[in-house]
Amino acid sequence: MKSGGLGEISWSLPGALAEAGVDARILVPAYAPLHRAFPAAEPVATFPAPGGTLAPARLLQARAGNGVSLLLLECEQYYRREGTAYLDANGNDFGDNHLRFGLLSRVAALLGSGESPLAWRPDILHCNDWPCGLAPAHLHFMGGAKAASVMSIHNLAFQGIYPADTLGALGLPPESFAMDGVEFWGKLSFMKAGLHYAGRITTVSPRYAEEIQTEAYGYGFAGLLRWRQEALTGILNGIDTKAWNPATDPYLPRRYEFAHMKGKEACKAALRERFGLNAEFSMPLLGAVCRITQQKGIDLLLDIGDEIAQIPSQLVVLGTGDRGLEAALAGLAQRHPGQFSVRIGFDDALAHLVEAGADIFLMPSRFEPCGLNQMYSLRYGTPPLVRNTGGLADTVVDCDAASLAAGSANGFVFEEATSQALLDGIRRAAVAWRDKPLWHRLQRNGMALDFSWSRAADAYKDVYAGLAAGAAKKKAAAGARSAAASRERRKRPGGS
Image 1 (cartoon, rainbow, N blue to C red):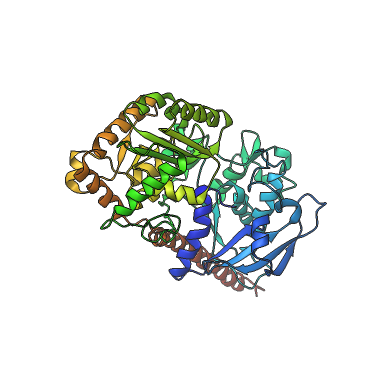
Image 2: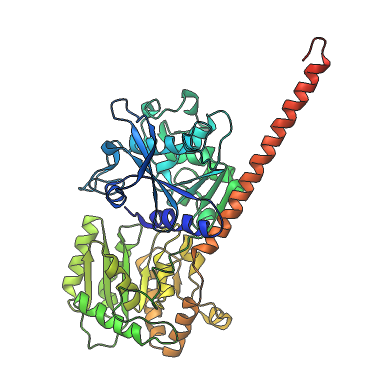
């Protein structure tokens, strides 16, 4: 049940934190695949489910493959369904997503409060994106000792917005429905709740933390985020460097590393064969693995498809998304058989082969909070071509005279979200590909970078430590006020 960068961080960051000495646990709904994967998970608590008619939810405990304790929130009616975490088999939002993720938020807050049924109590509740955005709001309205909270934004475009009358079913008090609360243009927003009530806010790249404070990228929250900018930090995601390593990748027909790059040529040959491309031509092979949407710039690619063919270049695309864009890509491939090929769907093994076999990886995103594929590409010696936005700007250094002299050039960057800017970038990359000494420098620079989660874990530890220190100061101040009030009462006649 993986969903892009959110799935990556939910799995990999806790493992890296555990290696760094943090007692991290993962709370996740017991989706059907997870329920099947952990049949021996032990029940440790029960909770009433929102809506009033469902059987109580259960909390199950298991051990994840990365060594971290896994807390599975089991509610068969909500989570054991066909489809993705959010969508049914037809690609439509589940109509009760507010209740499904309202339950997740409520249980997360309970586990971080004095009402928790577990002996283990967290100091920090780290919430990822809108599905658990109500958790900081629940914590705010709970009394007694409770965890501090962090809200991580993976994609601000997804906000979890529902009618105002869902407030009661979600267990929030009426006073929370205010401008300084969960209300957003007359509706309830899970994302707004997290951004307003969390102690700290993080994004998945430094550049994205800056971008979302502007009207162009803030999706209605720019003012709130500017108001909370002192609590806002951008931390670049990592990647699983064990799963994504060309020297050990089990999905590749031949493995390689920078000192021995022959294996990459074998991967290119295998990729051409898998996608039915002509193998006899010496031309750069462009690759893309992504959601087929306008956000990812697929429409820009379609506008210049015929020009790309004339460079000449080959192109493979793997992904799924907008049906109209999928059909247009298929039509482009039909016009250029043997040169362009598209696979609709997702195949993890094939995604690894595209990363290894392509010469140039395309990510012309209109916005990209972090992006992972450009980091995979750099690690696989496949210089990426990206738009200058979000995490792409934080990871890819444009190839020019200055960056080559500095030894930092590792790819190609274009500015404007236009098809012409993308085409100019592809032409520039194709020229560089023909200069083999230059190309090897780009590959070396990219493959030498460290995108491990240990780097990100250290940054999150700093955020957690700051929150914990702030909580300790508040507790000490509250204790001092209580002691002072007690002394004052004892001074009064008849005081005790």
